[in-house]
Image (cartoon, rainbow, N blue to C red; front, side, top):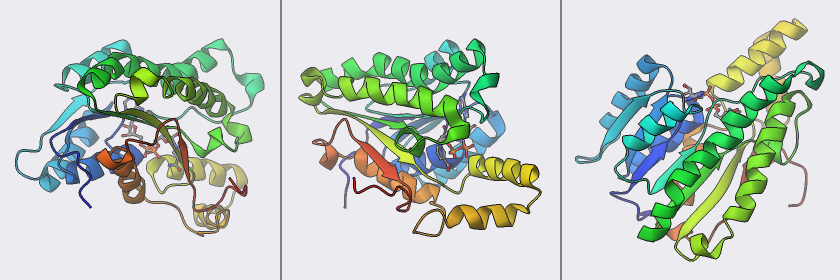
Length: 263
Ligand code: NAD
């Protein structure tokens, strides 16, 4: 299936590894030019080289090192993209913990990274998308938006704030009627560095080997495995496709069936 987005430009944030990288890869394979960002230059350049090796002739891959949660990082990423037709919002997740230990700064940091950064990038790009009659915005959030995880209160809170804001914005006729969609992708457990770090933390705390933690975690979903960044990226690319123009304001949970509700 040709997704009809060849030649478009995408800004994929936090994309040197994991889910962001999976999205960038799937978009490049569809002939989309990408600007990818991450803080660490080395991993970012390595990923850019991998993507260029996959890209058809003429498809551009631009790497911009910087912290997407800062105004400077966002300005540099936007400046590198001739026009943003597709925006994939992503950043590292907040740390786990007990809300009794979180002060105002901890909350502001989480809200900055996982709510205000995507909103700033949407603000900078969405009206241009509407003028041109095409735009796809995907916010990578978390399954925690639908089924909160107790130790991830910062994530539950900040990402739910983004989700609520976007639910209203996506339904504005001046966006939806101009072929601009905004949707959320909600990962459950995906096999990325982030998951490995979380599991290593759990292993250290419980004294169990990390393999035992991983096996127990896999059993939490009927799929009995973790998702892969490739699966995540392919789904993202479809949400960004020309064919998906009638789908907006939705939140897609990708968790191997772990969420137990009918809807
Ligand atoms: P990952 O650690 O594998 O990759 C994160 C990527 O983001 C890296 O490329 C890193 O360099 C980049 N990054 C982090 N902070 C950044 C910043 N401030 N500016 C620019 N780049 C930055 O993580 P992942 O598993 O791909 O997770 C992506 C997002 O999805 C995170 O917010 C995470 O909390 C969320 N999430 C992941 C899972 C999972 O199981 N993997 C589940 C739920 C939610």
